[in-house]
Image (cartoon, rainbow, N blue to C red; front, side, top):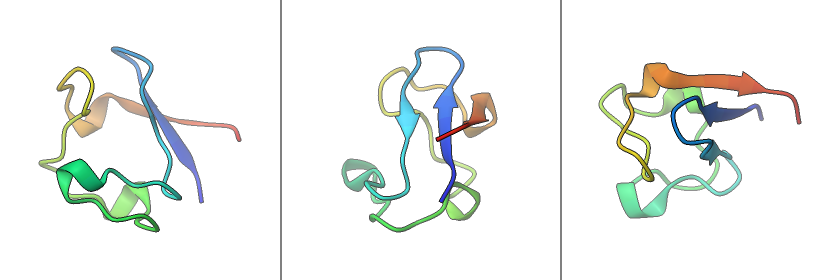
Length: 54
């Protein structure tokens, strides 16, 4: 699955890990993460993430 990086702080969302602290279980693709989800490090909106090459 594709990984995404926050342009504000550099946090990388990896679907293999998810974001369990925010209720996003491992295996959930970025496209399937709720639009209301925010970066767990800086609080940036989901739209502030960009796809990165593995």
